[in-house]
Image 1 (cartoon, rainbow, N blue to C red):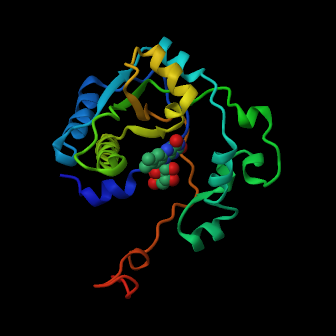
Image 2: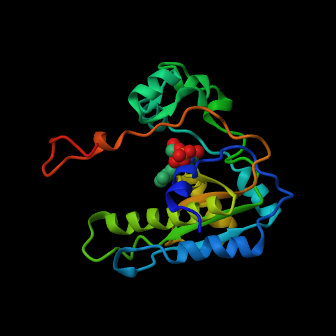
Length: 235
Ligand SMILES: Cc1cc2nc3c(=O)[nH]c(=O)nc-3n(C[C@H](O)[C@H](O)[C@H](O)COP(=O)(O)O)c2cc1C
């Protein structure tokens, strides 16, 4: 049995193109979905539906949707950026700016058409999971269905860890849940109007080595508090 902590630590976002000719094996896919199935959810509501898209023509159509990047996204994304590996290592949170186009990391610079309107909404992959939920069915008395949304996160992590254990690359694509793009995806996949896309996942096998750039996390003592807030955390 693999050590769960090792799988957790080796789980990562694989944002490169995946080999479209290397499909996810049927048994592997079942196992990933089985992991999702056993996720904890508030009141065991199991508040998700998943569309498995592996028809290459449909994937091509969804991938070709142009997704516009909002000014709000660029501004708030900028706040999460570091501009060198040293800065990122010092901060221990956020992302390296070089992941993004120059205009996204240069205040005041107008996004070029190719930065602001991407030609594809995601790089190629053999399988896309489209995770849906019904915003009308909230977890009991949960403001904004906060507990329901956490439940979707638990399910996401289960899928991700199982994919990692199977050596399958995984990439969350949130942009397909954005208003206009979401409408187009819903039309293409015949998703009922009342359901919402929570997130989508690219699954596959990366065709190029994943970026070796530094990965950071806060230390345990940075986010723990012992007995009361503000008191020294756990070393
Ligand atoms: C709710 C959620 C949404 C995310 N959306 C995206 C996304 O749209 N695109 C992307 O490349 N990564 C996305 N990520 C991945 C995070 O950026 C990533 O997990 C984080 O930077 C840590 O990197 P790691 O996954 O390689 O450890 C998302 C992660 C979560 C949990």
